[in-house]
Length: 225
Image 1 (tube, helix red, strand yellow):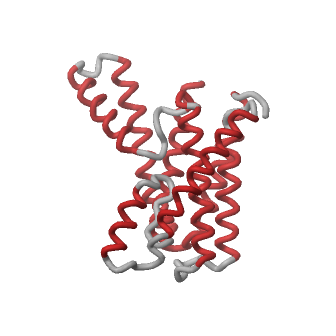
Image 2: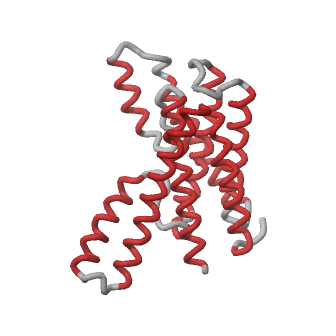
């Protein structure tokens, strides 16, 4: 049962990371919110293209992300229930969606400072999720926001499973874990692209609600806050 809950949490977190990364890229000046190092590439690209949009704002994601991770570390030390970080992340995403709706960002509105404010809130939420994955690595099947390492591990697991003719339960389990992690992220990306195109940043409300549900689903197995 506990292993199934870890799989559930992994699926939800990877899907939310893929979703948020894509929705901010699609609806907010090509900004990555989960895998923030990707903003270095976008920053450099827009710079050589003549500064399309507010190019430098991409670099602002780094201090916001770092502050969020530090706050996530504080939450982890302050509260007994380790999943409380996810609850906080859900609340921030819900706030982001509500704020985007209130500001009228339903169909990829023009680039403005209020839009960047919503984006930074989403980046902040992703910082909390990164902190959770780093502080509590055994609560998921792997990192939930950075997929390169997961794809590498999945490739190794596929090779090992094939060599063992799928008879080794450890290799088969690793293969399943990798498929959950990478598959969840891909599903999130597809959903984030679709919702971002239709509703812009207001679509951040959806993963926020999902995260709160995830928190209450895992709460019985965790200690109280």
